[in-house]
Length: 93
Image 1 (tube, one colour):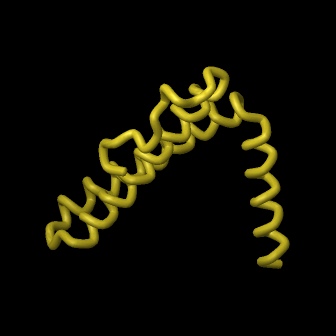
Image 2 (cartoon, rainbow, N blue to C red):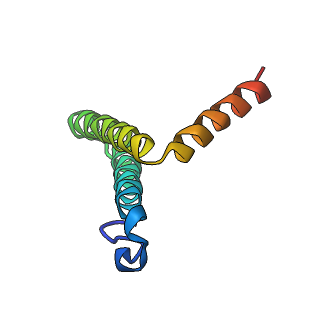
Image 3 (spheres, helix red, strand yellow):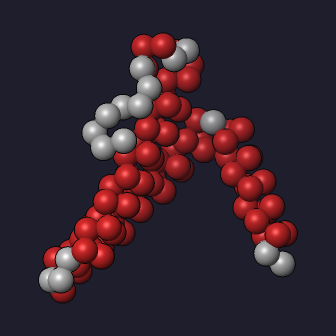
């Protein structure tokens, strides 16, 4: 993704715009996590690695914030996420 909104929000139904904004925010944060963790793996500097991993951790918190808001806006998403967790739990028993 890297700094591009992957959808045209003008083409989204008005009642779905907020959900798509939250999903796009989650995607941006996950991209950032991936980028910072990859850079941390590449650097030889312990200080840079430490800071990059700390920033990645903060981005993971942001994902959780967007997810919490999305679950309030989209009850089906919340339900299906719980179903997914349940299915994984069953598969890993």
